[in-house]
Image (cartoon, rainbow, N blue to C red; front, side, top):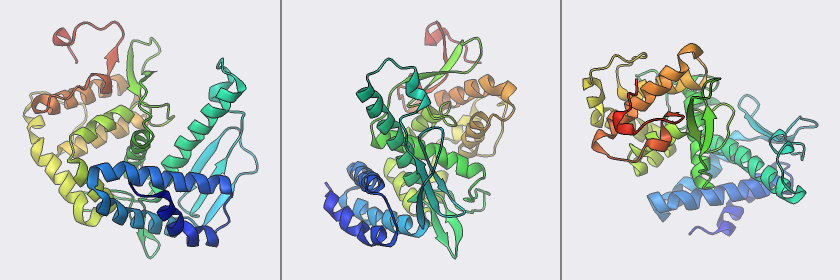
Length: 319
């Protein structure tokens, strides 16, 4: 296990150079400690130490200001890419807890937990931004490549990586509750989410499932060094699961490779593109994973679309 004191010592110059409340320092230290010790179990101690060095380098390079907002209507944490500023606000007036029958102490615990999720997610994004001469060259395993996957923020592949960051933080904090998110006014169809993220709730478990089909160690190498590994990760995935296109089904969306096809569905669902087709997108995304799973036999039931009072899976007509 990597000791917290090592991380604190590595962060000393960063903390000396930037004005930060002790309250926020604790979150930054805890995040890096939790992150590095989580990935150590997957990639080994030496690799995780090397990645920690890069995380701290990116953190130092990508944050020039940490700003407490004067006033905001709820708890808040958000990184501003243009100004390299991490903005935050903390309050007990949080809409999610107002109507819950909890004691004041338990409400405070829940608010801290929610703020921690927000803060960890923003820090997860920050440590994965790589830039050269102020130009972002990667926001994770997305680089500007021959297939047109661009790392620029505010674009589609920033949105995709945002979902991966959400999923990663849930894993780090073991925040894997199954919360129902209904997809229609009739409340007939729903998906599960690990936690309620306003933008990502409908697709969080799809990404969690998608990652099962990656080489987990290669995934972290791709995140840490996309120039060397991201194309390998994507190509390996497309090669292994190309059989999805042998399935005799005309998908509503279409792409030349499996990786891009999944990306396309994720973006359409998350960003409410052609929202009238939303449930159909969910059904087809579920079908994609059922086909992928043909040779893996993962238990995917809680990661795909559900129907209230649905009949047994064997006799279910997914489309």
